[in-house]
Figure (cartoon, one colour):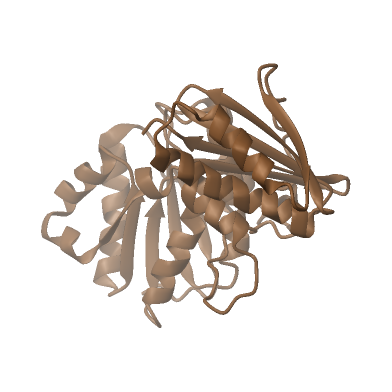
Length: 307
């Protein structure tokens, strides 16, 4: 039985679907034999192949749709937090796949931040999380980066130890890398207290050809972040908007400072006063990027307005 007294966060380097199933099925069965709670959060076809291999044992596993939950990487930690809390005093283990082939550069950056922040979010929580990475489909840079966020990397029969992320690693998720500049065709607007109606009008104009439901979702997320600028960012901010493929991208800058690397990943409590803006944006948006230094904060939102 797992007697760990702290969070164990391992990366599993595997080569193709068959190797994934072989390596992860053993991990799952080991947990089930020890009467541990087990959850699997991977995408297809790996989820289906692992279910098939587990056969009747699959019924004793919690299956999380990582393609849905993990579309915005900032939603993964709250999902794991909810699941672990639901287990009460049981020992538990999970398999989580935040990075897969097809993620774009911006998503990969935030997924790497997520992998680092797992170590902060679950520090002292006694459970095991195995994060699989396919060496046949992911680039060398992505594979190499796992050593910065996983204290142990499993590769074939080898177990390679790396230093546990330090506080500066967590703080660095708010510092960079710098976001690419807004394109020349972006629209910009400065706003301050009492002028959020102008922000909403700009969003509606940029989304004039988009269905009302998608427009309203974008408006809610953007209004929350703009409201944060007024309340916590010096009373003013600037917004930049542009369309990128099926997405609306919104960037809001202000003079405030975000100091909590897990901002937006804490599930609000019913009696909580404030602190909901980034949470709401993360639930709505396909990607939320936060960069914050002593000179100010930028929050970039990406939301699919075509689906």
